[in-house]
Image 1 (tube, rainbow, N blue to C red):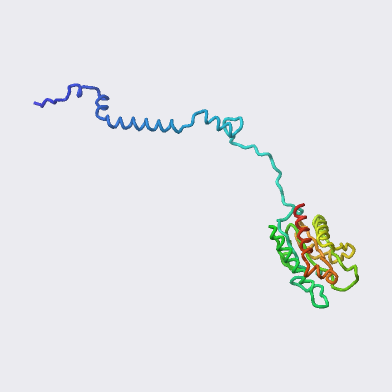
Image 2 (cartoon, protein in one colour):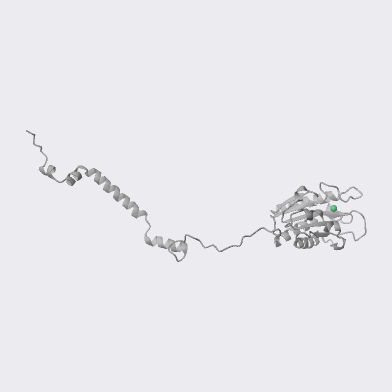
Length: 259
Ligand SMILES: [Zn+2]
């Protein structure tokens, strides 16, 4: 005979799902709590519909959602033409550097030394104004196809005691690239700073047909300036050269401001 169990009689006779629940009460409570927790987290962090609409209208104006495709107006492709401005860098040729001494005075003062000192002072001044500069030799290998915002070649006139008119400066611009802006800026700034007269009538074929004009990139404006005569203007070109340097710096900055 089978021993009689003391459990309540309905336990064995109740339907399967009731027995299942009774057996798994801890598990079911755990699942319920987990679900309620997740629901609470979802409600807490989910922005209300109102918020989403406000954000969308702020972001995209009147629309409720931001457009996926932006309408960008057609823009012409800008091509760098030969005449367009080069990088903002100034090339300075220290006349005769690396080649010969240029004009020489009776006491041995050379044009090359005057040109080199002025080129150096001009470069230092421009660089302190944040303008990249580089000093080039008269026949520098870099001149072939040279590209810059401007190229300035510094020379000085003869040291012969010609006459009392042998004082002043002159400028010749490249005919390969429009260099008139650079020429005009330099002529005005240099004349104002130094009070030297402008010698338009003594510009030589050598200046107009200057070799560097033919070598550099066609987009680079270029001038050659004869800063003064080594005989009568000697002091201004050597021991009292501040106005000369200021004139050169102002000529370059005037040109850069206009281009
Ligand atoms: Zn020279």
